[in-house]
Image (cartoon, rainbow over all chains, first blue to last red; front, side, top):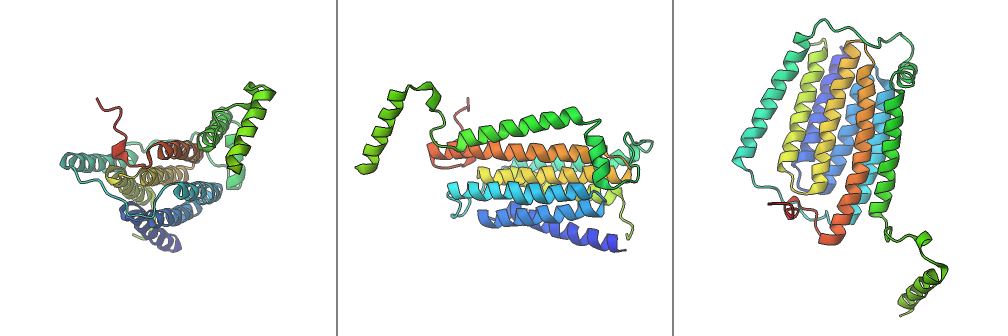
Length: 190
Length: 102
């Protein structure tokens, strides 16, 4: 009973928020609606008993990703209204066809595969404990690869967004660095 | 109606995925296009978590974790590239990026 109420409430809220995020012409409205939608999605994870995933969803999406987008919006001129693409008929036809096929596949898949057995069945411990046991035994290598990928993404983000990252101070001699500093001081003074 | 099953979550995931797909199709500003891709990834995460719960298998949650990790790194690299593009060209409209058009 309460599960149904919670499901329909959060389903409505999430759909409404994402609809606003997609259709609004103000970038700030889109950002805030998207952040709210992310929080509401974590509610589904809590309903489904995946508490660790819900906490990760709140921390990563509403904390890290939304903060990154907010900082990114300060770089771009997003206060003006966003121009929209004029609708192309072929694109709209292709989009609706894709969506219809997707709906059919998603409805058909659980009916086709009724004899699925769990590969890593849940054993009744807490969700976080189970996740830790599976993540650090069966999925250890993908976990480490994901860690390396996050490191690469962090370094590339810093290098791309930072200033004068293409200059390497270790490749210059001391005299050249002093010359550069003098040039900078002249620019500041003049 | 009152019993929430797997199909409820799959239908919700489909609706959210379609919303994200519409956003990808109609957005011209690249920052808002990124927002739409986040919606796509989140809708898939809901489906993973629901299947993981109803079949008693933790693999779906594992995949959801990796999807979240990939989304985070995608945002970092994508925003860095957007900042570089904005410094050089002054806008982030998708129509201005036609230098590879044959």
